[in-house]
Amino acid sequence: MRVTDAVGQFGERVAADHLTAAGLEVLDRNWRCDIGELDLVAADGDQLVVVEVKTRRSAAYGTPAEAVTWRKLARLRRLAAAWLAVHDARPRSVRIDVVAVTVPRRGGPRVEHLVGVA
Image 1 (cartoon, rainbow, N blue to C red):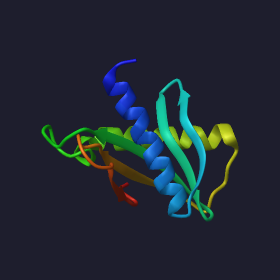
Image 2: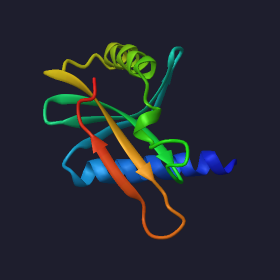
Image 3: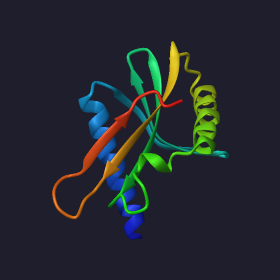
C-alpha cells in the first residue's frame, strides 16, 4: 500500500468518526459505480449527506478543502443521484459536505467539516 493511500484511508476513518460524533449516521463507505466513488454517505435526520473526504499531511500544496473543485462537486452530484437510484432512497433533501483532514507530523489530526458546500 502506498503512503498516500494509507493517509487517505486514515482520513476517511477520522471523518467517519467525526460525523458519528456529530450525530450523523454513516450509511455507506467507499461506494462505487461506473462513474466514480463516494467516500462516505451519511444521514443527518431525514437529510442524505454525501461526504467528500480530503486528507493531507500538510498545507504545502493547499488545504485539503481547496482540492475540491467545481468539477468534483458536479461529479458528486451525479454520484449522489446514482446512489439514490440504486438504494431507492427518498430523503427530504440531499447535501454535499467536505471533511478536510490534516494529519501533521506531531499531534492528532485536525478536522474541518464544511457543511452544504453544493
